Image 1 (tube, one colour):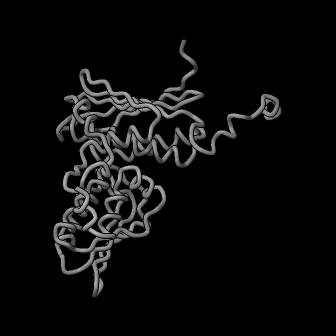
Image 2 (image 1 turned 45 degrees about the vertical axis):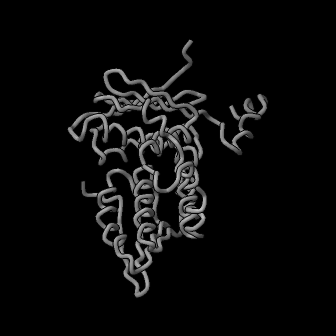
Image 3 (image 1 turned 120 degrees about the vertical axis):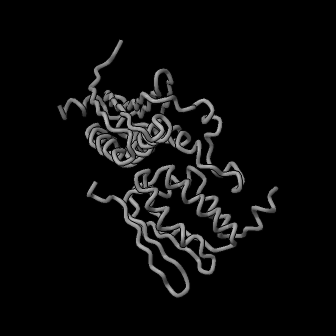
Length: 162
Length: 116
């Protein structure tokens, strides 16, 4: 059973100069859905990290395309970031996906940090690598601190607004 | 692309290098930041201070560069600090452990070495 969903799609060149366009689009859609400033900032970083990986690893600097699909539902926003390049080794990197403080300074490498951030900043992250890489990021509505007030609006007060 | 989204301003003071970074430090801005800061990081004769009050965006690309700078400075025994970190940037520094790395740098380097 698929609930009501609105989809927006965007394709950008796999070029660092266009990742800000993905962020701007995300900002517009997430703001329209009523996500908080903090939640939108979190999603901006997560989406950029997925695009960074596509630019750096999928096409080896040779031109390609990144497809973004924004699935807007009543309870969540999912962003699917897909490339058609050679698969980024998420399985290997996920073992290194840790905060920097877990390691002594001498051993710190930035690799794995992008995936760590995606996992830390989103509610759900899944990666499929078949004919390219597909990263699916999901943020649910009203999960954050201080957002619970919205959940407890009584049915009568909703009716009054309608 | 005409519209620049990232700026680096270097101010050489008698007793230290101050670098102001403004705008979005992402993958597109990484090379520009690297070019501007690398020579200053190599000058161990003066403390290096990077001020972030006008930094509007950072991700693992920029965070990785700060860690690399920190390593370079630590190797030289040269002081390095980041100042005026905006809350949303601070949040990412806390999440990734960069705050911890900087705190160990600025308190006592002995403490890190004494941990093992």
